[in-house]
Amino acid sequence: MIKKYDYIICGAGLSGLILSHKIINDRYFDNKSVLIIDKDLSHRDHKTWCFWEEKESIWNDYVVKAWSNICFKSTNIVKETHLENITYKMIKSVFFFESIINKIKNEKNFTIIEDEIVEIKESNVVKVKTKSNEFESDFIFNSLFDLNTLKSSYPLLIQHFKGWTIKTDYEFFNDDVATIMDFSINQKNDTRFFYVLPISKNKALVEFTLFSKSFLADEEYDLELKKYIKKLGIKSYVVDEKEKGAIPMTCHPFEKNNSNKIINIGTAGGWTKPSSGYTFKFVDKNCEKVIKFLKEKKSSKKISFKTRHWIYDLIFLHVLYTKNNLGKNLFEKMFAKNKTELVLRFLDNDTSIKEEINIASSFPKILFTKSLFQNIGKILNYYF
Image (tube, rainbow, N blue to C red):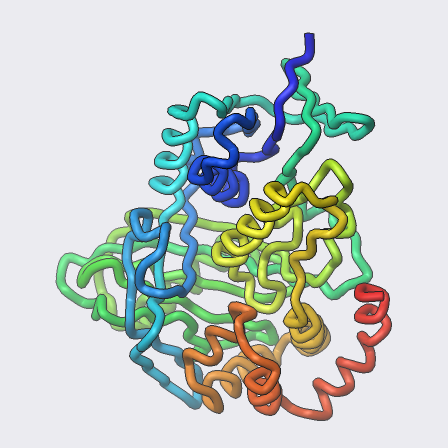
């Protein structure tokens, strides 16, 4: 007999676990049965998520480090800002995953299994077939995504990165300041920058990030990391942790793949910020929308995760796609001409139209107007 659940969450990654966390904390769902399926619950790969928000939130218990001072660097600007209303926060994936999975295992209405999903089939109910079993549900949340299978007429860049958490045997870092972007490196016709996120005075995550159409050879990431660490003036260090990843940067309308019984979440749902690659905060916001939708029992076709900022992302991403070498100059102009907190709120899709006009005025008008007209068909098709 096939076992049926009220909800099935396919994938226990970031979006699957944040959604589970919110369901656990809402008494409305106490009598709802939830199944989570993931092929590897160990989550041994190290990942780091950064975001900014008010100083207190439900995620504070998972924050490894928070900064009230952030720095943006480029060839022509070094801008350090004290954040008055928000803090820049770091969460490490291993502790986050372990903590939430342990919470899930203690919930009577949750079942979590380690198995590989081979098929999701929708009819009157949705059937999820794994290598060893089969399940049914009236509603599925799917976070399974394969970048290699994405085919789209929309511009697609890849945010790919490699980071080392390094330790020095002496106090080197100012752990009161997080460098969120440092473009003062050879761009090599790409958009390239570094993060430096000090966890303590002798420990920091140093991460090399690119927005480009293709990956580098693995040894190239290592070479750039070594060169940058040397440039910082660090003579001796040990690598404590390594992390590597890739995120699609695209305005592809993922949510059009949603149905009355399936909502794609996380990267599979297009929840990554297309123009920056930031993900954590958007997963958090969109999971709140999902919870509201479930409680109001509306058709999933009526739930939308897009705001007008999608249009700005499309225009900006199209410019980066066609002229990737301009990324450094565009981010430099945005940070140089606007208050840092305004830029962060803009990147969070949390600004007014007037503020967005001020941000837009930072960029080359002819280039961005041309991009708007080149994408007007996609904009009209998406909204109408």
